[in-house]
Image 1 (cartoon, rainbow, N blue to C red):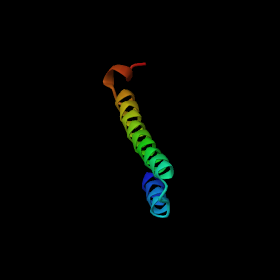
Image 2: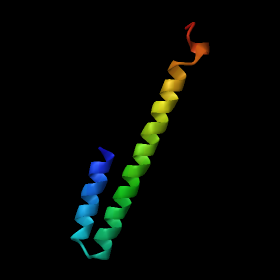
Image 3: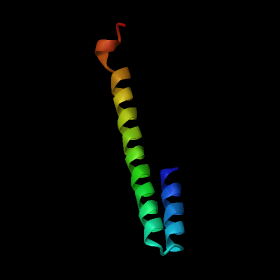
Image 4: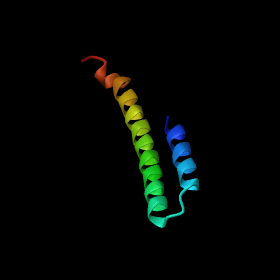
Length: 58
């Protein structure tokens, strides 16, 4: 999903030449990438917590 959004933003940026719009598009791409990274980190943390042997007796 992330890649499709990034691709669409890149397609849109190809049609815009105004500095303000290009900056906004680049900021949106960075936010999406950061959110994807955070989601992956939280998924890893959740997996680690669920599979931790110290929690199996609860």
